[in-house]
Length: 283
Ligand code: NAP
View 1: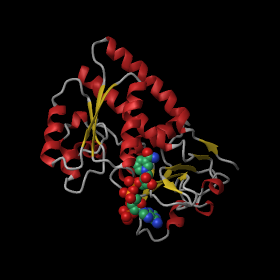
View 2: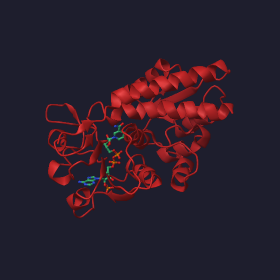
View 3: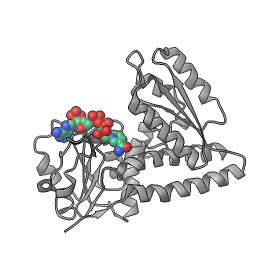
View 4: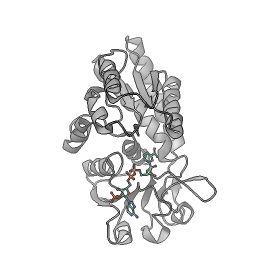
């Protein structure tokens, strides 16, 4: 069989149009959703990411500010900026681009963000809310994966989902979201003994590792849904995921490409979270 593609660009366009409509409605009632993005240092990849985030906000009619600081900004100065943004009524979401310079404690900075403005979903309060099923902000990448499953009308109840990777920003929240939708969830990681034995049982596989060809065709049950979160470079410098795409697409039922899959969904869900934060603040 040849898998059907889950097109992250098309789904993103659709969801961003919805965000723009809801943002316009909120604006008409006097609140323009606002996102503040803080970048410390001159990491080239981070610069691209923050520019894309600010542009996406602008395109959807959201207010956004980009605060760029030199590498030698002190942690105390950064915490003071976060505190000021916590109290700024024009700002509903605060995003501190990671990684931060080595002299800063990234977790401490994230914990300084007001949970009501934690649109990245990295605050411990957001993690706790997800774990307990309470309202809060979900991390954008796994949230985007859930939207992709929703977009194909996939019923997770009773299905077996295997998540490869257990990071705090992708793997673990992904597993909790799948569990919340009544999937039976297995989390695999670098110490998992027989990854193939696990993935072969899966109806849904989420690969979030950061290594090329972690998931090959012989590891996939025919018809399974495969979501590829990985972002790697192949030998020619071309962007690729964790999945051996060409071979796996001949076995899977649904598959996300890289690029054009989970990647665009991450920024889209940041817009959704920012809008949601503004709507909550306006209630
Ligand atoms: P990470 O923090 O490095 O976590 C990688 C996880 O993979 C770890 O849990 C690690 O296990 C596990 N792992 C490593 N080798 C493995 C193996 N051979 N078999 C099974 N598991 C293995 O990475 P991350 O931040 O979660 O990101 C994962 C990938 O997603 C990266 O390529 C990243 O660039 C990409 N990403 C993409 C987006 C997007 O928007 N598309 C967003 C975020 C991340 P241990 O815990 O045992 O070390």
